[in-house]
Picture 1 (cartoon, helix red, strand yellow):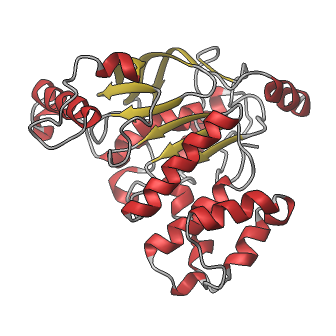
Picture 2 (cartoon, helix red, strand yellow):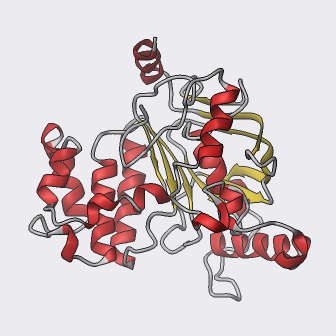
Picture 3 (cartoon, one colour):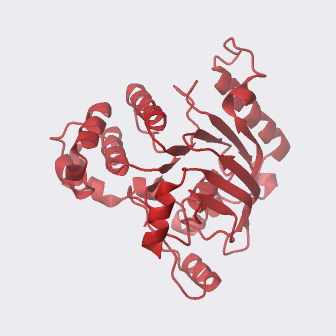
Length: 315
């Protein structure tokens, strides 16, 4: 059945649809509320919002890493949690923290381990685009160099839908620009779709086709990027930003004014917001949280539905 779903989904356009999605964490705190989106095939969507707005929670739900209510999410026409989707890739913080890339291991071995020999042209293209030295040993490189190798590993197998959760923070300006250009060419040359959460707007002018503005677990507004940018003067704004930067700057200022000080808004920590274990565990990267596993198991009748995405396709 899973194989049939994977085969059928691969034939359907890579559309991302969300219908009145709400999600509550195991401790009954609200993650996201009443989200509805329809992102078309070949779109490049930027997910914008302040820290704690719910971007990571939404991405993890879309990727099938958290159990969403039935009939609220459709990726390529399939519920990403119930079915195994071929070609759906999620690159988030737990992927970044994967300890294997800090061991004394070579780049060639790592790329081979994720299918590099099966996609030699794509492997070589990623190595060149990310300016990777195949002689590197992973325990002896910088964080930025390590991130380049991780990106090559995560993107080596051709994907249909790609969810990115701010994984370019360690890249220098040139590497990040090359990476974004490559992603854009991917969506222009084949049937694939990208949803990218980021706070870094450098080199993103003209990149997104759609924008989604999140605030306190909700989507305040979303539309085609050209439609949303039409109200912004084409000249460089007073902050020195691009039109996209001016739009986002205005959104975040308004969100802050509406929310008020965090200490008075009762938002909790970001670890709590993202549901990765909270303050005691340190939040990010905790995929073994027992209460989360028990909560998801109870909701689906006894099946352990925790999935792991370490730069691989959803499976």
